[in-house]
Length: 64
Image (cartoon, rainbow, N blue to C red; front, top):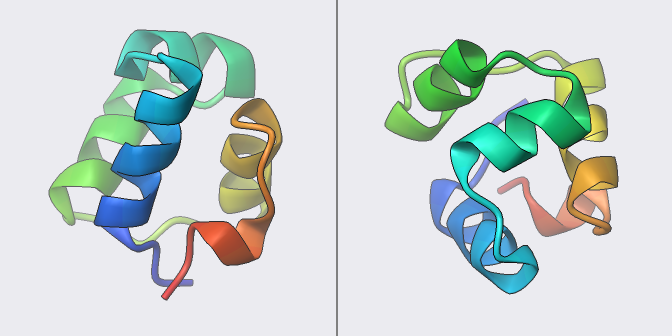
């Protein structure tokens, strides 16, 4: 699943979350989120779901 980094960054800003906040709220490691944001990895569907839930948005709001 391809995450749109710009949409993810906007969602983080809307929630006033840092990467550390997102990691804590989503139960996804900070390192994994950092790799996702830098474009080094494509996350599994479940990971995108956890991130969307933590950001109170739909998965569709984060993917291309």
